[in-house]
Length: 415
Image (tube, rainbow, N blue to C red):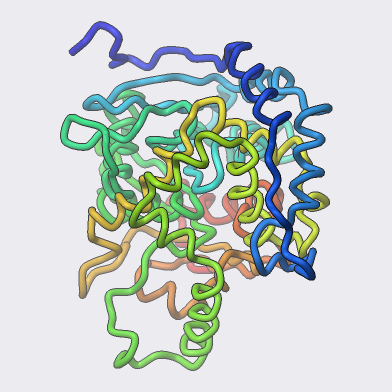
């Protein structure tokens, strides 16, 4: 083991060199704009990122955005680096306030693509310190927010001793080792996620359930805002409920329209990554289009999210040069080549699902989720999309509290 490897988590603060920011400013100043598509709809963006909206974002980025202010906000919670079998992991940990009551439940929050730990910055304090936000301290969590391998301030994915794509099941194993070997938790813990975070969280629930013995560590429950697993069935011959058939037909239409990025990033990511790593405008367009299309923005992405939020999320990829290694995950899941439970099994860990209506693909009906999960709670949300923690933080936090509350106190949960 080399001297610079961190077995014990080491405190970390984000401190981007000024030369990185100067280089970014120069690149933004020299953008070469493409020709716009005549007559493209400025609300639905049928040809991709709307150039007028992108110009507005970049104008703000150049002249009004303050990275140092954003950096200070990102450093608000304690951050650490640790190494597990050569994989450098960055994570945030915000412990609950000590009290004389029951110990807080450890909770792992996992982000997705093209997001980051920024998604959770607005809910960490609510989850760790509910008593400061009008809640009950009995609902407190010890909050851990890891950065996916290849993303942001985590290192590139390490596969078989070298850099390369890894899949979400491998990441779930890293998360479990982070909890048990680096943070030394014993007993049950909880997990939540959307996008890749939903898939990693699903594997945590499948591979690492809590045994019920105090000396063992594992998942007492998982909460999802995207379905991480597809059922191990043949959709053409399975006896599907009418709502499942209707949902599948709509989901196929959306996949045809919205998922070309998955094909590129899952087959030849390195070619795309050259462009995204070299051009901040290109990176911004690639990411902004997803925040527009996968959220409840209703065409007005710059009104739905603040410019500072959108740019800070892009900046996390830019200042770390990590968009390329982040995109490897789409190839990694294909190479891992297992996409859910084996036939005859499901995630037996109690599961809660929050159905936000404006997600990338229409969220599945309850019957579909029950094929893959021990579903205990299914909540129809009135609004919100793919980036739930950013779009509807209060709804998400309350649903998580309601779901995990009976589990942490050993009460039946069958909502």
